[in-house]
Image (tube, rainbow, N blue to C red; front, side, top):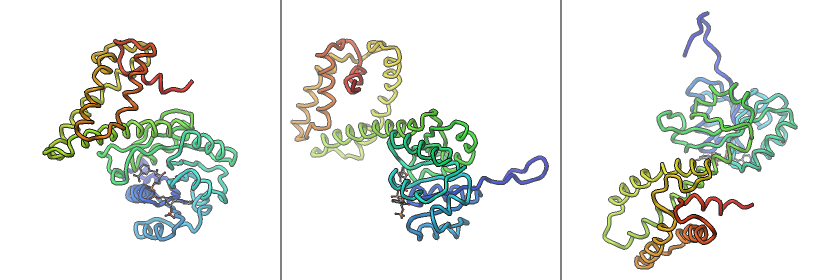
Length: 299
Ligand code: NDP
């Protein structure tokens, strides 16, 4: 613990935390381990009492937990559970930090809801799983959006469990960044599932194949920087090394291979269909796959 020049030990910010599921419990343990006074509440009380041995104070209602401190962190299942838990709480003058996963629209509405009740509001999207919490080298962080002043006021305490990344004043932006990254992750999972399916019935050890797959995905991942630069400049041919026409011409190879291996192509065909549509609806044969993004965005 650091000591001020005057010899006083600075007080650690007190936190109220509502929600002690697997993520909330991990957050609680990180704040307790760092010496932050912590008041907790959970709908099912047993999960809260389990933390008393580690120094947590247990509030007997969500309203009491909110009343206990000015900084109130929420980590509940979904947006509906936030509304339910805080129905009877007096939020006047509170700093609400909502780490519950939600949509951008829910986050914006929740920010307005909080403002109408006299609270300041910061939304968060957690880019970590519980074992990464309290382990700085694991690289977990939370996207924050909403009031920058509120973020800056509490950044030090918010950075105790995992890192912090502020992405803008729009309260929906944290959720948007969160869902965007996770959506890309599901695309990667889909590709990996197809790859494993292709080798599944052959004499190929999946554990020998996995490092090849991981290395290839890692090598391809930086292509997002080129996509971003093309989107920014509006020039989808800039720096292209694998032109759209060539890639579309190659798609039958993938479909025939899937057929030959007895694998459904259903994870690949939607993307291939978009590639073909881009080519037939005016995309340059020399451009990258960036034009697919334009087809996805609804006017
Ligand atoms: P859990 O399912 O483990 O816990 C859910 C929590 O929400 C519990 O505390 C539960 O209380 C509470 N809850 C559910 N419904 C209500 C309600 N109607 N009123 C009050 N409390 C309610 O989820 P996690 O802790 O894993 O996740 C919490 C948030 O963190 C979610 O939004 C999740 O998306 C997000 N997150 C989780 C990650 C993970 O890997 N776990 C990763 C990134 C984000 P009770 O104990 O009474 O059921």
